[in-house]
Length: 390
Image (cartoon, rainbow, N blue to C red; front, side, top):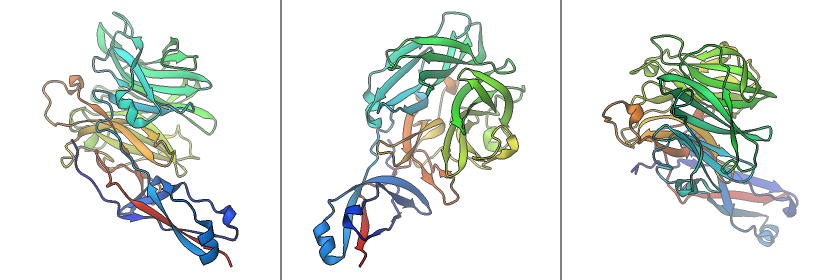
């Protein structure tokens, strides 16, 4: 259990000046600071005393900053955790099943309720042939009125012949709807490939995935524009392992996830072997650049999230992104183990638990993930000074 807690170092100073009290609207969120990094939190304000404001011309209104009280871990034994917040008010959760033999999905109106939410079986592996081994890293997406699940699968007679596949559901409820296999994504060369994710930007849809191209490298990252949710156009190299922290045990770039903020496109990814050395890096591109051009992207020279002895969380990675229930706070969803030593192949140790924590932002507009298990002390108050124009 992680009992390591940071302190909020500052709360944004707010002031509103209005000529008409009826026009006053209290802010829905406020910045909280962790040194020079900030996050947004929703606020529940006390009632606005308009009579006092009219009499005194200036009042101070207090509010309680909304807390992020999520279970630790959020969902046990779900590596590669993925949360999708849909317009129906539900959060949907999936991840790699420990036996790597099925795709499951659960949902809840509150993130914390995902922990105990009923889990639905959507699809199971075949006994032989394609999609009969290593069912990995499912992601749920809603595209043009249909549900899609992107996942990787191998085959019983060649367990590392892993490829990306897609399921489609046209029903409103993906938990109970009919899922149809759309087949393998048409990547340009046949090799170990996995961890496909998709995103839309400026009217175009893209796919990013990990793929092996050299004997001494497990996987690079590739990007392609898409013709439709299951078909890519020409693929382009996006990133390859080049730093020491990407090459521990194995040379790996995998598990891409996309978040768009502050005029930039960010792609987080995971690197190195899947034990304690597993960590996350970050690629950044300007939102108006050519996303298919590798030169548009810059990579962090150091990991942005890695093992923390202080919180006893090891090998954080393969993340996704979501938002808090009030829409104010960006959240990081990832997996990590609570112990370092693993017997045998870490891929088959089931205790990579799904976890969630707050994302902070730097003044340059880039995300700050801190360390696995980052959490802040509760019971914080915000204030806003309201003045009437004379």
